[in-house]
Length: 108
Image (cartoon, one colour):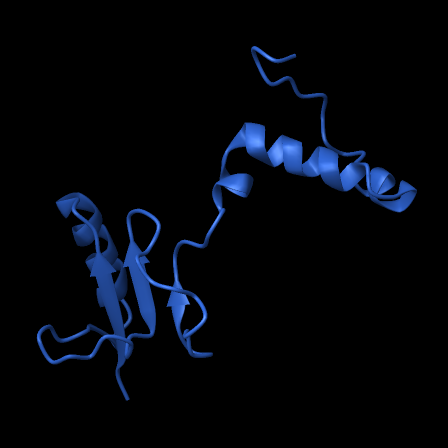
């Protein structure tokens, strides 16, 4: 049974890269357009934050962006998140001892 992917992006080079990646896996085909199949994809690729809500996602569906993902993907936001986690308990503080000293310029 084929699996469907849907690409929503305005960058042609990104579309080609994603399509080439899915072509390697024979079970994935692009979701047919114009057949009113809004939520039948297995994988949804978006260049920016997707214009959909995460609540109706079915267990087999995947997307490549999540709300507030920049908390983990930007170094300054990641460090702030680690600091918050370190300050929760002594155990958390010990868990994050591996994080090197980091400065967020111009604040530090």
